[in-house]
Amino acid sequence: MALGWYELKLAKDGQFFFNLKAANSQVILTSELYKTRQAAENGIASVQKNGVDEKNFEFRNNKNGEPYFILKARNHQEIGRSEYYSSRAAAENGVQSVIKNSASPTIKDKTQG
Image (cartoon, rainbow, N blue to C red):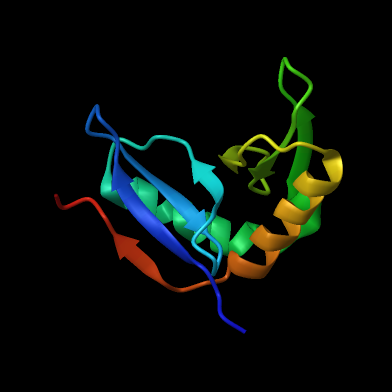
């Protein structure tokens, strides 16, 4: 079974962030912004560690009522969040995809050009 991967990227303001992508190339989790590459790489390691446990996910709704989820570390700090979904069931499927793909060791560096 193919696993997804992490893409390490640069934001317009020069900060680093990453996306966890499923095997079908769909973004399933986006990190916060980090000031350094090392901090972003530590964030990926935290997702690899914490993303396999369903207890670390929290479901929320945006102001339009669309469900999404947040992945939290054991210290309750947010590591990443999902896109907005059309239903709670779709968001729950997204969590299962993160659980399945978060252990991926593959990091694709997209910070150069």
